[in-house]
Length: 177
Image 1 (cartoon, rainbow, N blue to C red):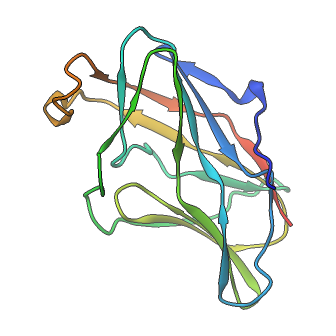
Image 2 (cartoon, rainbow, N blue to C red; image 1 turned 180 degrees about the vertical axis):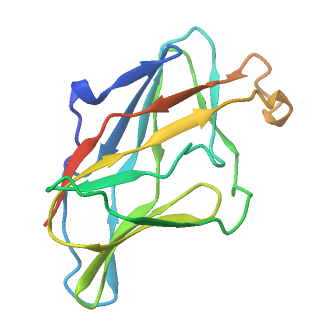
């Protein structure tokens, strides 16, 4: 069983919505070369408003995730945008007073002697951290939506509105073991 970082001090609230990055606190490394292990990673969102809110999936991470090693060094990141279309519904719907976990499909894999962390973005591309080593890390994610684009919202929820804002979620700690 894996544990998640649920430290309350890592929660930030913007425009009446609470955001918290959640990641496995200990990520086991794959034992064999060219194999991977899935990582539990995502954003836990709580809607503290009186409205149903939509959160856009496509291109919602406003900047590249930041990864720092135990010595405070910034780990280089690479990204790739393969397509600009989301499979399924392009929005997450969160009712008033409800919470939802926005999963970011991620995994760590071993390419011979080197470890890599790959985080898929909702636009079909990915963020890639190369040449990681076992040890402690800090990860920071930002989420942003600056326009309403109400015409893209599903018609079955006419009272729902798109959440607008920009949030940088505090760093969360994890360990690659």
